Length: 256
Image (cartoon, rainbow, N blue to C red):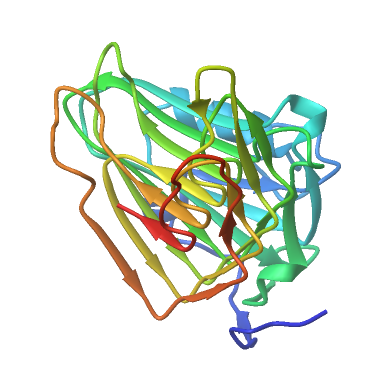
């Protein structure tokens, strides 16, 4: 498999400082445990749910492999009424035993099977930001009908507000498709739909599509805000992203 971004191994010891690493969660495609120790791997959805409802910052170490989003109807993390700054990091590329990490995003794939959104991140109320970090993974084959953000939806509650910051580095976002339903509902942001602050770096968006705006990405907003999302896109590749129409769609790579 190819890697547009380069690859090298990071080797670390598993003797971590408890004050910094107390909230590590170890994840594998076949995990059924709580993820709090390396022999007791969690599933990705369990880990996201645990990280969302507990107060600490969390790092989810994803073992290399394919994670099926269709098995759980899409991976989702909802943080409710957050009042202190909170971070959830999804770190891909880890070998068995979590000793070494590859930066090749194709070693760790979150796959929507062309039937469901891959990853849904939501801040639902609260006064302090939730920071989501994604690194060294592929988000692929996501699909929404009447929704937006087939690969990733990073959003703030329309009812309760909230604050969400998204940071993506070293990822591949590929072959995700957003389509609208009757009345032109949804269909934006094939690869990524984002409200809140966003930084995307060293990431490839390839062959994503939207029925309407933003084949690769759409940056938008939620009421009561009226300004579009503040975003930074740095050192990224956009390849073969497209809008399918009808109507007057815009932004085959990025709509803002």
